[in-house]
Amino acid sequence: MSQDPNTDPLTEFLLFMNRGGVRDGDVDEPFLQQQLHLAVAVTEGLRQQESSARGDVITAFEKGMAATDPRVRALAASSKYRLDGDAAAFETALAAAADITGSSGFLAATYYALSVIDFNPGDEFGPVRHMVTRERRRAAYRKALAQVRAELAACPRAPAKGQEVDWTVLLTGQFLQPPHAPTVTALEFARALKVEHGKQVAIVNTLEMTPAIDGCINPCARYTVAERMAGQHQLQFGDMRIPYFQAPVAAFGPRAIQFTAQVMDMLQPSLVIGIGASNLMSDAFVGEAFSFRFATTSDLPLVDGVYFHTWSDPDAAMQRDMKTEGIADHYLFAKHPGFDIPAAGKTLTRTALALPEEAFVFAVVGMRLDTEVDSAFAACMTDILGHPKAHIAFAGPFDRFGDLMAAHPEFAGRVSHVGFQDDIMAFYSAVDASLNPRRIGGGRGVAYSLGAGLPTLSLPYGDGGAAVKPLPPLADYSEMAARAKALVDDTDLRGTYARAALEAAKDISGRSALVTRILDAKAAHEGGTLKGGFAAPE
Image 1 (cartoon, rainbow, N blue to C red):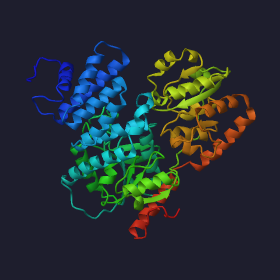
Image 2: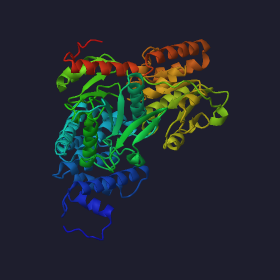
Image 3: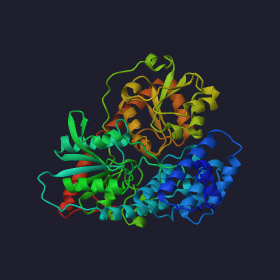
Image 4: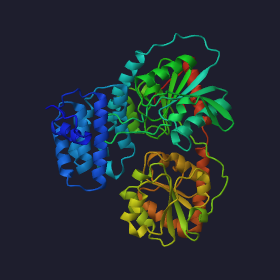
């Protein structure tokens, strides 16, 4: 089974799969990264264009599913699912992923791949999203965390020394530039801590949401990284300057962990706030500071040792999960995080946006429209556009907009994509109402829509659903479409919705209230009076 050095990588990849994951050399993580890269390229290519090779590739993946190495089984099985939709193959991938071992980067990437499928399944993974259970994601999270802690323990650490400055460190797994939601969240927290509470704040990008192709699930969760930020030590946010640290490495792993440890040793913070529903590094530093997790979605976050909150009172399912996972004692309070809703500034004309002047325009805003605008939402759009005056305008990255229009010729002249809008409030000034697709995230866009006084329609799900609780409920897309068409015709209904939107925006405006609760909890912890659990006082 010697391998021909003249064989091209793609052919060698298929040979590797056909041999059940056996090769002469080591099946190490760099080799697996290459195989994942090829698997993603092959499956996405065949999904976009039919080929006579499709059957041979599926057969190769079937043989790869018999590999003794669970990493190869997971890769082969998840790749097969992407080509033929075989749910049993996807179950095989999940079962194999539960048995893997590896470095922090490999395990974290595998965890995040599962997390992305749960967070944003789209039409491709919608049929199997229920298989990516919280139990499975929690197991993957804790396995990755154990390896992160092991690698952190191996880092040389500086001895503790007295610090004149009481630092708060915000740990984020990804940092780009506004309006990227985790980036804006970190900046808003820094502003609230510094301006309203007089705290010294630094932001550390741990690169946990790795830009590398890694892990054993196809597709991998490959995130964007701003490499130029590695050499930037201060951020300008309004009139504030915020110390910023980012490891000068290409991916999450031991070197990135060591860099973060060095920053922690230098600053010796008394408070660490992990940004995100997932944040391995904030859990890894438990015991070195009061560590709190700000969950960026309304779901129960995955945590191990950090203190945390929920956006609203935990329901029975959340309470059950907290008890099962042994984290109930670290639950502190229920508090919607709030958003710094910008004031209306400049306006945009419909002419500038190429939107019809006489139409009733519904806005749909998002950064993940390619998967969030699925077949169910497209059906809702068709229903809404049954009203002759209705028009729908998408704002945000949407590579598959052309595919949507090609699949729905009836959308021609009735649906627009205005591209990315850096001033979303200006865009909202040019539309009549907004729609929020069913998604876990989307809370910021909905909050801004409410702050603009727009009639805002969202299902009672995810962050958007949490923001519109004071508004009349909508059970499903059928009700959303009916309400949307009613808004077109009913001036009084539009006025009622607009007033309710502005009132709802007041309840979720600003980060200060949440920051105050976190600082109060830290003070109680230092005073020995902090109590967690469901009976924690509001």
